Image 1 (tube, helix red, strand yellow):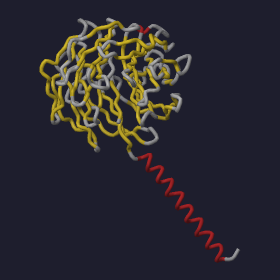
Image 2 (cartoon, helix red, strand yellow):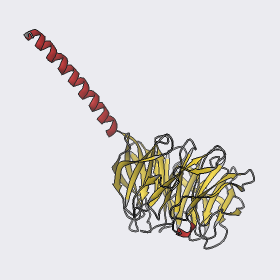
Image 3 (spheres, rainbow, N blue to C red):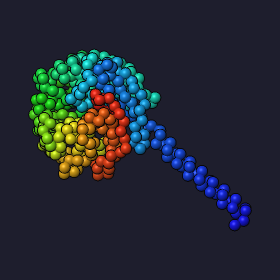
Image 4 (cartoon, rainbow, N blue to C red):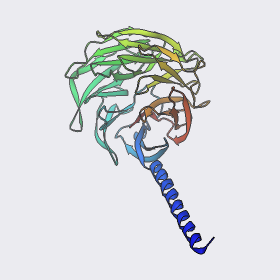
Amino acid sequence: MTPRLLTAVAAVAAVAAATLANADDGRRSEYREPHGAVYTMTNEAAGNAILVFDRLANGRLVPASRVPTGGNGTGAGLGNQGGLVLSSNGRWLLTVNAASNSVSLFEVRSQGLRLADVVSSGGDRPISVTEHHGVVYVLHSGTDTIAGFAIDHGRLSPIPGAVRGLSGTGVGPAQIAFAPDGDRLLVTEKATNLIVSYPVDRDGVAGTPQVQASNGVTPFGFAFGKRDQVFVSEAFGGAPSGAATSSYRIEHDGTLATVSASIATNQTAACWAAVTPNGRYLYVTNAGSGVISGYRVAFDGELALLDPDGRTGITGPGSTPLDMAIADGGRVLYVLNGGSHSIGAFRIGPAGALTALPVSVPVPGAANGLAVR
Protein backbone atom coordinates (compact mmCIF):
# COMPACT_ATOMS: atom_id res chain seq x y z
CA MET A 1 0.00 0.00 0.00
CA THR A 2 1.44 3.39 -1.01
CA PRO A 3 2.12 6.13 1.59
CA ARG A 4 -0.60 8.29 -0.01
CA LEU A 5 -3.15 5.47 0.25
CA LEU A 6 -2.16 4.81 3.87
CA THR A 7 -2.69 8.48 4.69
CA ALA A 8 -6.15 8.45 3.06
CA VAL A 9 -7.19 5.31 4.95
CA ALA A 10 -6.02 6.82 8.25
CA ALA A 11 -7.99 9.98 7.57
CA VAL A 12 -11.18 8.02 6.85
CA ALA A 13 -10.70 5.97 10.02
CA ALA A 14 -10.21 9.13 12.07
CA VAL A 15 -13.42 10.66 10.69
CA ALA A 16 -15.34 7.45 11.40
CA ALA A 17 -14.01 7.28 14.95
CA ALA A 18 -14.92 10.91 15.57
CA THR A 19 -18.42 10.31 14.19
CA LEU A 20 -18.93 7.30 16.46
CA ALA A 21 -17.57 9.21 19.45
CA ASN A 22 -19.90 12.13 18.78
CA ALA A 23 -22.87 9.77 18.42
CA ASP A 24 -21.92 8.06 21.67
CA ASP A 25 -21.52 11.42 23.38
CA GLY A 26 -24.97 12.35 22.10
CA ARG A 27 -26.47 9.20 23.58
CA ARG A 28 -24.70 9.78 26.88
CA SER A 29 -25.81 13.41 26.85
CA GLU A 30 -29.41 12.29 26.26
CA TYR A 31 -29.24 10.10 29.34
CA ARG A 32 -27.71 12.90 31.41
CA GLU A 33 -30.33 15.52 30.56
CA PRO A 34 -33.43 15.56 32.82
CA HIS A 35 -36.65 14.51 31.07
CA GLY A 36 -38.83 15.28 34.08
CA ALA A 37 -38.87 14.84 37.83
CA VAL A 38 -40.05 12.52 40.58
CA TYR A 39 -41.21 13.90 43.94
CA THR A 40 -41.72 12.40 47.39
CA MET A 41 -42.06 13.97 50.83
CA THR A 42 -39.87 13.09 53.79
CA ASN A 43 -42.74 13.26 56.34
CA GLU A 44 -40.10 13.93 59.00
CA ALA A 45 -41.25 15.16 62.41
CA ALA A 46 -38.47 17.73 62.67
CA GLY A 47 -39.49 19.37 59.42
CA ASN A 48 -41.23 17.98 56.35
CA ALA A 49 -39.60 18.47 52.96
CA ILE A 50 -40.04 17.54 49.32
CA LEU A 51 -37.26 15.48 47.75
CA VAL A 52 -36.83 16.21 44.05
CA PHE A 53 -35.17 13.71 41.71
CA ASP A 54 -34.31 14.46 38.09
CA ARG A 55 -35.74 11.78 35.83
CA LEU A 56 -33.50 10.75 32.93
CA ALA A 57 -34.43 9.23 29.57
CA ASN A 58 -33.33 5.74 30.63
CA GLY A 59 -35.48 5.88 33.78
CA ARG A 60 -32.63 6.62 36.17
CA LEU A 61 -33.15 9.11 39.01
CA VAL A 62 -30.61 11.68 40.11
CA PRO A 63 -31.07 13.56 43.42
CA ALA A 64 -31.70 17.22 42.60
CA SER A 65 -32.92 19.14 45.66
CA ARG A 66 -34.61 19.08 49.06
CA VAL A 67 -37.24 21.80 49.57
CA PRO A 68 -38.80 22.40 53.04
CA THR A 69 -42.61 22.42 53.12
CA GLY A 70 -42.93 24.85 56.02
CA GLY A 71 -44.66 22.17 58.10
CA ASN A 72 -44.00 18.95 60.02
CA GLY A 73 -44.58 15.32 59.24
CA THR A 74 -45.26 12.51 61.69
CA GLY A 75 -42.10 10.48 61.22
CA ALA A 76 -44.29 7.39 60.75
CA GLY A 77 -46.71 5.88 58.25
CA LEU A 78 -49.95 7.71 57.44
CA GLY A 79 -52.02 4.79 56.14
CA ASN A 80 -52.82 6.80 53.04
CA GLN A 81 -52.54 7.26 49.31
CA GLY A 82 -52.10 10.70 47.75
CA GLY A 83 -50.01 12.52 50.36
CA LEU A 84 -48.73 14.76 47.59
CA VAL A 85 -50.08 15.48 44.12
CA LEU A 86 -49.31 17.50 41.01
CA SER A 87 -52.05 19.80 39.76
CA SER A 88 -53.90 18.90 36.58
CA ASN A 89 -52.02 21.59 34.62
CA GLY A 90 -48.64 20.57 36.08
CA ARG A 91 -47.96 24.06 37.48
CA TRP A 92 -48.40 23.23 41.15
CA LEU A 93 -47.38 20.56 43.63
CA LEU A 94 -49.43 20.13 46.82
CA THR A 95 -48.49 18.17 49.93
CA VAL A 96 -49.91 17.57 53.40
CA ASN A 97 -48.09 18.25 56.68
CA ALA A 98 -49.84 15.73 58.93
CA ALA A 99 -48.30 16.76 62.25
CA SER A 100 -48.82 20.51 61.82
CA ASN A 101 -52.31 20.33 60.27
CA SER A 102 -51.35 22.26 57.18
CA VAL A 103 -51.06 21.93 53.42
CA SER A 104 -48.25 23.36 51.29
CA LEU A 105 -48.44 24.69 47.74
CA PHE A 106 -45.33 24.74 45.51
CA GLU A 107 -44.87 26.36 42.14
CA VAL A 108 -43.26 23.91 39.70
CA ARG A 109 -40.48 25.65 37.81
CA SER A 110 -37.99 24.37 35.24
CA GLN A 111 -35.20 24.93 37.77
CA GLY A 112 -37.05 23.36 40.71
CA LEU A 113 -39.80 24.03 43.26
CA ARG A 114 -40.72 27.31 44.94
CA LEU A 115 -42.80 27.25 48.13
CA ALA A 116 -45.75 29.53 47.33
CA ASP A 117 -48.05 29.08 50.35
CA VAL A 118 -48.65 27.16 53.56
CA VAL A 119 -52.12 27.25 55.14
CA SER A 120 -54.14 25.46 57.78
CA SER A 121 -55.66 22.34 56.23
CA GLY A 122 -59.02 22.97 57.92
CA GLY A 123 -58.93 19.86 60.09
CA ASP A 124 -56.78 17.51 62.15
CA ARG A 125 -54.11 15.21 60.66
CA PRO A 126 -54.33 15.80 56.90
CA ILE A 127 -53.23 12.67 55.02
CA SER A 128 -54.35 12.97 51.38
CA VAL A 129 -54.84 15.80 48.90
CA THR A 130 -56.36 16.13 45.42
CA GLU A 131 -56.78 18.91 42.82
CA HIS A 132 -58.87 19.59 39.72
CA HIS A 133 -58.65 22.82 37.71
CA GLY A 134 -57.63 24.91 40.70
CA VAL A 135 -59.97 23.32 43.27
CA VAL A 136 -58.20 21.44 46.07
CA TYR A 137 -59.57 19.06 48.70
CA VAL A 138 -57.78 17.72 51.76
CA LEU A 139 -58.71 14.57 53.70
CA HIS A 140 -58.28 14.46 57.50
CA SER A 141 -57.96 11.26 59.51
CA GLY A 142 -58.11 13.02 62.89
CA THR A 143 -61.40 14.90 62.42
CA ASP A 144 -62.81 12.57 59.72
CA THR A 145 -63.52 15.50 57.42
CA ILE A 146 -62.67 16.92 54.01
CA ALA A 147 -61.98 20.60 53.36
CA GLY A 148 -61.91 22.54 50.08
CA PHE A 149 -59.58 25.29 48.84
CA ALA A 150 -59.03 27.29 45.66
CA ILE A 151 -55.66 28.07 44.11
CA ASP A 152 -55.80 31.80 43.49
CA HIS A 153 -52.72 33.62 42.13
CA GLY A 154 -50.35 31.27 43.90
CA ARG A 155 -52.25 31.20 47.19
CA LEU A 156 -54.60 28.69 48.79
CA SER A 157 -57.94 30.16 49.87
CA PRO A 158 -60.58 28.18 51.82
CA ILE A 159 -63.81 27.71 49.84
CA PRO A 160 -66.78 28.89 51.97
CA GLY A 161 -69.02 26.00 52.99
CA ALA A 162 -66.61 23.38 51.66
CA VAL A 163 -66.03 21.33 54.83
CA ARG A 164 -67.84 17.99 54.96
CA GLY A 165 -67.82 15.01 57.27
CA LEU A 166 -67.13 11.41 56.34
CA SER A 167 -69.52 8.54 57.15
CA GLY A 168 -68.82 8.87 60.88
CA THR A 169 -65.92 9.07 63.34
CA GLY A 170 -62.96 6.73 63.62
CA VAL A 171 -63.50 5.59 60.03
CA GLY A 172 -59.80 5.27 59.09
CA PRO A 173 -59.83 7.18 55.80
CA ALA A 174 -57.12 6.40 53.24
CA GLN A 175 -57.47 8.54 50.11
CA ILE A 176 -59.40 11.39 48.54
CA ALA A 177 -59.40 12.09 44.80
CA PHE A 178 -61.40 13.89 42.14
CA ALA A 179 -63.01 11.88 39.38
CA PRO A 180 -61.48 12.83 36.01
CA ASP A 181 -64.32 15.24 35.09
CA GLY A 182 -64.03 17.02 38.45
CA ASP A 183 -67.70 16.85 39.38
CA ARG A 184 -67.28 14.19 42.08
CA LEU A 185 -64.93 13.28 44.94
CA LEU A 186 -64.33 9.80 46.29
CA VAL A 187 -62.98 8.79 49.72
CA THR A 188 -62.12 5.27 50.92
CA GLU A 189 -62.64 4.30 54.58
CA LYS A 190 -60.54 1.38 55.82
CA ALA A 191 -62.22 0.85 59.21
CA THR A 192 -65.83 0.89 57.95
CA ASN A 193 -65.31 -0.84 54.58
CA LEU A 194 -67.15 2.04 52.93
CA ILE A 195 -66.61 4.28 49.91
CA VAL A 196 -67.95 7.83 50.19
CA SER A 197 -68.90 9.91 47.15
CA TYR A 198 -69.48 13.69 47.09
CA PRO A 199 -70.94 15.75 44.24
CA VAL A 200 -68.98 18.96 43.60
CA ASP A 201 -70.73 22.05 42.23
CA ARG A 202 -69.38 24.79 39.94
CA ASP A 203 -68.12 26.77 42.92
CA GLY A 204 -66.06 23.81 44.14
CA VAL A 205 -68.38 23.07 47.08
CA ALA A 206 -68.78 19.39 47.96
CA GLY A 207 -72.38 18.35 48.55
CA THR A 208 -74.14 15.72 50.64
CA PRO A 209 -72.09 12.51 50.76
CA GLN A 210 -73.37 9.22 49.36
CA VAL A 211 -72.12 6.17 51.22
CA GLN A 212 -71.92 2.62 49.93
CA ALA A 213 -70.29 -0.62 50.97
CA SER A 214 -67.04 -1.72 49.39
CA ASN A 215 -67.03 -5.12 47.68
CA GLY A 216 -64.05 -6.20 49.76
CA VAL A 217 -62.62 -5.57 53.21
CA THR A 218 -60.29 -2.61 53.93
CA PRO A 219 -60.70 -0.52 50.78
CA PHE A 220 -57.51 1.53 50.53
CA GLY A 221 -56.05 3.22 47.46
CA PHE A 222 -57.83 3.78 44.17
CA ALA A 223 -57.20 5.02 40.66
CA PHE A 224 -59.45 6.13 37.83
CA GLY A 225 -59.49 4.59 34.37
CA LYS A 226 -61.36 5.40 31.19
CA ARG A 227 -65.14 5.61 30.76
CA ASP A 228 -65.98 6.46 34.40
CA GLN A 229 -64.10 3.45 35.75
CA VAL A 230 -62.49 3.37 39.19
CA PHE A 231 -60.32 0.61 40.66
CA VAL A 232 -60.06 0.13 44.44
CA SER A 233 -57.44 -1.98 46.22
CA GLU A 234 -58.61 -4.11 49.15
CA ALA A 235 -56.09 -4.99 51.86
CA PHE A 236 -58.44 -7.44 53.65
CA GLY A 237 -56.91 -6.45 56.99
CA GLY A 238 -53.49 -7.73 55.92
CA ALA A 239 -54.66 -11.36 55.79
CA PRO A 240 -51.89 -13.52 54.24
CA SER A 241 -52.45 -13.89 50.48
CA GLY A 242 -55.91 -12.38 51.00
CA ALA A 243 -55.67 -9.09 49.09
CA ALA A 244 -57.86 -8.16 46.12
CA THR A 245 -58.98 -5.35 43.81
CA SER A 246 -62.48 -4.36 42.66
CA SER A 247 -63.53 -2.29 39.67
CA TYR A 248 -66.59 -0.04 39.51
CA ARG A 249 -68.36 2.26 37.09
CA ILE A 250 -69.41 5.66 38.41
CA GLU A 251 -73.09 6.16 37.57
CA HIS A 252 -74.71 9.54 36.84
CA ASP A 253 -76.20 9.67 40.34
CA GLY A 254 -72.79 9.10 41.94
CA THR A 255 -73.33 5.50 42.94
CA LEU A 256 -70.72 2.88 42.10
CA ALA A 257 -71.84 -0.07 39.97
CA THR A 258 -69.64 -3.12 40.46
CA VAL A 259 -67.89 -4.46 37.35
CA SER A 260 -65.39 -6.91 38.91
CA ALA A 261 -65.80 -7.85 42.57
CA SER A 262 -62.69 -8.54 44.65
CA ILE A 263 -60.38 -10.08 42.06
CA ALA A 264 -57.63 -11.61 44.20
CA THR A 265 -53.98 -10.59 43.90
CA ASN A 266 -52.98 -13.82 45.72
CA GLN A 267 -50.67 -11.58 47.73
CA THR A 268 -50.79 -9.68 51.03
CA ALA A 269 -52.04 -6.16 51.85
CA ALA A 270 -52.87 -4.58 48.50
CA CYS A 271 -52.94 -0.88 49.29
CA TRP A 272 -51.84 1.47 46.48
CA ALA A 273 -53.11 1.64 42.90
CA ALA A 274 -52.01 3.18 39.57
CA VAL A 275 -53.41 2.96 36.02
CA THR A 276 -51.50 3.42 32.76
CA PRO A 277 -52.53 6.51 30.74
CA ASN A 278 -54.20 4.37 28.07
CA GLY A 279 -56.35 2.73 30.76
CA ARG A 280 -55.36 -0.80 29.72
CA TYR A 281 -53.30 -1.86 32.75
CA LEU A 282 -53.73 -1.47 36.50
CA TYR A 283 -51.05 -2.08 39.13
CA VAL A 284 -51.44 -2.47 42.88
CA THR A 285 -48.66 -2.76 45.45
CA ASN A 286 -48.89 -5.57 47.99
CA ALA A 287 -47.09 -4.06 50.98
CA GLY A 288 -47.07 -7.32 52.94
CA SER A 289 -45.41 -9.48 50.30
CA GLY A 290 -43.02 -7.20 48.36
CA VAL A 291 -44.91 -7.67 45.10
CA ILE A 292 -46.68 -5.52 42.51
CA SER A 293 -49.71 -7.20 40.94
CA GLY A 294 -50.75 -6.23 37.43
CA TYR A 295 -54.22 -6.47 35.91
CA ARG A 296 -55.45 -6.27 32.35
CA VAL A 297 -58.40 -3.86 32.11
CA ALA A 298 -61.09 -4.70 29.57
CA PHE A 299 -63.06 -2.02 27.72
CA ASP A 300 -65.89 -2.26 30.25
CA GLY A 301 -63.50 -2.19 33.23
CA GLU A 302 -63.44 -5.91 33.94
CA LEU A 303 -60.20 -7.03 35.61
CA ALA A 304 -57.98 -10.05 34.92
CA LEU A 305 -54.62 -10.77 36.53
CA LEU A 306 -51.64 -10.53 34.20
CA ASP A 307 -49.94 -13.33 36.16
CA PRO A 308 -51.92 -16.10 37.90
CA ASP A 309 -49.84 -15.77 41.09
CA GLY A 310 -50.11 -11.97 41.09
CA ARG A 311 -46.33 -11.55 40.90
CA THR A 312 -45.99 -9.09 38.02
CA GLY A 313 -43.18 -7.06 39.59
CA ILE A 314 -40.98 -8.09 42.52
CA THR A 315 -39.65 -5.43 44.88
CA GLY A 316 -38.28 -8.01 47.32
CA PRO A 317 -38.86 -9.41 50.82
CA GLY A 318 -39.22 -6.66 53.41
CA SER A 319 -39.29 -3.91 50.76
CA THR A 320 -42.90 -2.90 51.62
CA PRO A 321 -43.88 -1.28 48.30
CA LEU A 322 -46.18 1.70 48.88
CA ASP A 323 -47.04 4.52 46.47
CA MET A 324 -46.55 4.32 42.70
CA ALA A 325 -46.35 6.80 39.83
CA ILE A 326 -46.28 6.14 36.08
CA ALA A 327 -44.10 8.19 33.72
CA ASP A 328 -43.07 8.42 30.04
CA GLY A 329 -46.58 7.99 28.71
CA GLY A 330 -47.02 4.67 30.46
CA ARG A 331 -43.58 3.17 29.88
CA VAL A 332 -42.00 3.45 33.35
CA LEU A 333 -43.47 2.74 36.79
CA TYR A 334 -41.77 4.18 39.88
CA VAL A 335 -42.44 2.70 43.30
CA LEU A 336 -41.75 3.99 46.82
CA ASN A 337 -40.44 1.11 48.95
CA GLY A 338 -41.12 1.88 52.60
CA GLY A 339 -39.26 -1.13 53.97
CA SER A 340 -36.05 -0.68 52.01
CA HIS A 341 -36.28 3.15 52.19
CA SER A 342 -35.84 3.62 48.47
CA ILE A 343 -37.49 4.48 45.16
CA GLY A 344 -37.24 1.79 42.50
CA ALA A 345 -38.50 1.52 38.92
CA PHE A 346 -39.85 -0.92 36.35
CA ARG A 347 -40.16 -0.81 32.58
CA ILE A 348 -43.76 -1.41 31.48
CA GLY A 349 -43.90 -3.72 28.47
CA PRO A 350 -46.40 -3.62 25.57
CA ALA A 351 -48.50 -6.33 27.26
CA GLY A 352 -48.23 -4.80 30.74
CA ALA A 353 -45.31 -6.93 31.97
CA LEU A 354 -42.93 -5.27 34.43
CA THR A 355 -39.13 -5.48 34.05
CA ALA A 356 -37.03 -4.16 36.92
CA LEU A 357 -34.72 -1.27 36.06
CA PRO A 358 -31.38 -0.63 37.82
CA VAL A 359 -32.88 2.23 39.81
CA SER A 360 -32.64 2.55 43.60
CA VAL A 361 -32.33 5.92 45.28
CA PRO A 362 -32.42 6.24 49.09
CA VAL A 363 -35.20 8.13 50.89
CA PRO A 364 -36.00 8.60 54.61
CA GLY A 365 -37.80 5.80 56.38
CA ALA A 366 -41.00 7.83 56.81
CA ALA A 367 -41.12 9.04 53.17
CA ASN A 368 -44.68 9.30 51.87
CA GLY A 369 -46.32 9.85 48.52
CA LEU A 370 -44.99 9.82 44.98
CA ALA A 371 -45.65 12.15 42.03
CA VAL A 372 -44.01 12.35 38.62
CA ARG A 373 -43.85 14.72 35.69
